[in-house]
Length: 203
Image (cartoon, rainbow, N blue to C red; front, side, top):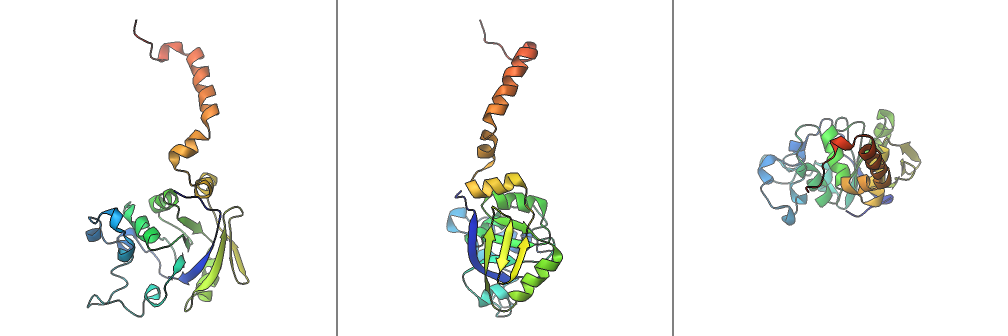
């Protein structure tokens, strides 16, 4: 995974609450190999009418090149399917801004380089209104946990470990390795204080 600390991209409002992982990618598409890409299945059923044609009323169908979504409450709730994040990432989405996220979705997002930016409701409403019809250029700075869209600025909440993973492109193993010396020191101390608890080499 490639790390990143700043991103400037096209932001669009998707002002819908409780978008769950089954809406992000319906289960029937999850048998497709990841190598073929999941982007075309993103929000598949929400984007289409009863005749399976793309609806001109749906925001993402009207605008191409969007890399940031300004969503509503409780984004990514529901089942734990990581394919929901794959669909977003494969469609070119780098960040989702919302007031809250499903816990497992947020973890999966971080592990795939996607920012789940949790912002207070007042700022989310301002951002939604600014990009409700036409996308706007929004800047993200992970070093300061800050979003900027025109004259609108907002800070977002992000766990420090998650922030380091995004910036450095680390997975969980990479993050653990940053504590190698502390882990080694603890192991050495424990082997001295409780030698009976450690395996011994066979004679």
